Amino acid sequence: RINNTLRIMKLNSWGNEALPKQGTKLVIIGGVAAGASAAARARRLDETAEIVMLQSGPDVSFASCGMPYYIGGEIQDRNQMAVQTPESLRKRFNIDVHVNTRVTKIDTDNKFVTATDETQPGSQSIITYDELILAVGSEPLKPPIPGITRDGLFALRNLQDMDAIVEWLDDLPKKCTSCSEYETKMHAVVAGAGFIGLEMVEQLMRRGLQVSVVEMMPRVLGGALDEEMAAIIEDDLKAKGVNVVTGDGIQEFLPLNGNEDEDDPSTVVKLRSGKLLPPAQITILGMGVRPDTRVIAEAGIECTPRGHIVVNDYLQTNKASVWAAGDAIEVLNPIVGNGDKWAVPLAGPANRQGRMIADNIFGQKMRRFKGTYAASVVRVFELIGAAVGMNEKMLSSKQLPFASIHVHPGSHAGYFPGAKSVNLKLLFHPRTGQIWGAQAVGEEGVEKRIDVISTAMQGNMTVEDLAELELCYAPPVGSAKDPVNIAGMAATNVLQGLVEQVDWKELKRAATLPGVVILDVRNPGEIKKSGPLIGGCDAKIINIPLDNLRDRVGEIPADTERIIVSCASGQRAYYACRILMQSQSAKVENLSGAFKTFSRVSGRV
Image (tube, rainbow, N blue to C red; front, side, top):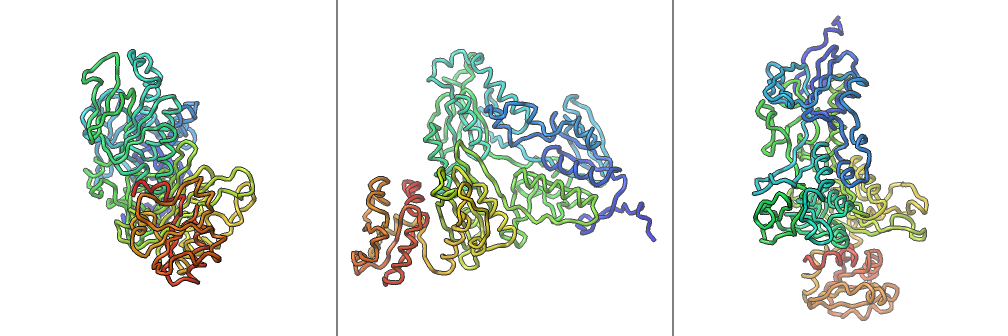
């Protein structure tokens, strides 16, 4: 009989059973999302464990996702930014927290880390461990652009960065004695139009600054949204007065007039195209992140070429008793399967990974991390943009077959006042109906629909299942056919061959081919108000309102080989397609997303 108190043998690094451990010394490098979650869970599972947390900088478990909103003043209480403090972690969870402590070396053979106190240069401490969790997170990208170290240029990683930005903005009237010579407002440049970049655009405008945002990719939010979805947000940014620059990178950060002036800290941003932006009194660097793993790689812990830590299904590294979680790891992509991996730096997965590692160290059964579906959301002024899974660029890069549908239903019943359009795109396998991903943009009800589709994806549901989902309905908050149901129905129609589609990117080219007719089934008053579907090309366009189509179908030329049908948002065009497919010999196709989608992007093709 084995005494359970002796069952503290070392786990095989790639094992699949967790054994109870008494008095285990757990060292955690990093104390924000994954690290703090792991520490708290470990304490709840084992009161006898010695838990040591090492965190660079003075803060742990802070609300990093809320920092732009504090800068803009939506969050006004600075204390709210600290979810936990070193003192509260010590008092509530009996965790030995060491802040301002940077790990400089990891020795996995002898199981210790070397750390230095950032407040005492040259200091050095040795901390041994039984189990080690790497929750080091990511750091902002700072490319070697000339002038990037100038005053007034800020990245945003921690509360110290946040405080420095707030202090700089508060002091600008004193710092910039000649700024009154500019236009009525001071100017800010945001480099990068990802989530953090666009959140900072909004918050800087809340503080009264004019804002330019520069994005090297062809569109804003290019990592999450496809072009036609991102266009909705980009157009709204421009309507709000934001100077949006896409498809152009930053070449240099220059002092005003080429000379450093202590009375004017302004920076002139020179773009690769040669254009100069107006002088900026503050510049935010939001050009992406990279894993903070240099010390980890030096320890022989396996990392990818891009620096992400390689872990197995249990979040173990290639070194015994070393685990990793959060932004710095590469995880399974369960959408693709077959061992495909990707890096998803999001707070939700990081917190769950930290908790799971604690379970695997101190629990009775090892748990597999199934991967990340990359569900994400951002608010940009009144609009919400949300996505889950893979977009067209990702699918194309992996040569995966896909089809897509666009629908534009209301956020709740149309007869109840205040309904807002939910612009929803669903990507799926054209034969099996597997859901590859979804994107939505609108003012209301957006993230709810993406959450539902994310849940469906995790349950291995298909687009046909989406059509059958039972969801809450009352007129003020939903519809009898929820937008998710409608998207599932539209995709199922494609899957079953009830309708064929033309993507918005193909319309202009297809419209000029011989034998092609564009049929617009909107009412004449709609066309007069919103404009024609397509112009500037030699296309044959016929307008027959849907309700008159059966009586006027003879107006479609007899030699027509292909009919592309459109309406305002897609529903009437589908009805028209079903009429024509049962009465015409020509090939009939529905314009995906109809006028509402194509009009957003027609100038981009």
